[in-house]
Image 1 (cartoon, rainbow, N blue to C red):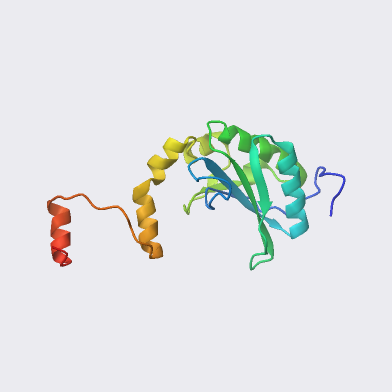
Image 2 (cartoon, rainbow, N blue to C red; image 1 turned 90 degrees about the vertical axis):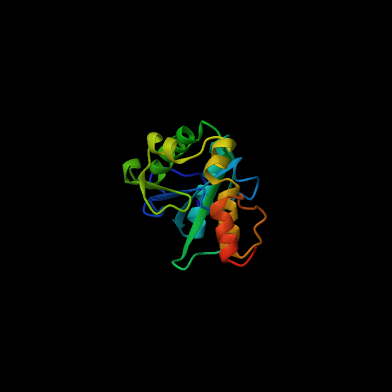
Length: 179
């Protein structure tokens, strides 16, 4: 374990070059208020070193944490929670410029994936600006109650909203024997 702090190259080949954004739920607030950034680290000690580096180095970070157990491949997930605001893209890039110094990677090697998307995007301010909702309102527009109801239905949780009454929904209700 590193005690003197991280220096250039200390985490070489230990950090996967794929960042996930808002894939995980916030543990410290509502998802529309808190953005969760995550990536995989090879080994618990390197993940904890990087977590400490991030928590102590950036005042915009609410919390950083390492997964309690290892994944099937032996890697750990590092979770970073920050307030959802217009500075997120620039803050993430500033943090990543520091991280690539300790990993020996290039920022151009990194990819970002948003929410449950399957498409990788280059890690840049312009891409992050397009991908990340920067306000709670923007987040709710993208993932409002309709999306929550879809997730509830898939999870087998009772859906509490009702479809509007129109000819189409009435025909569906009739076909289902509800009316």
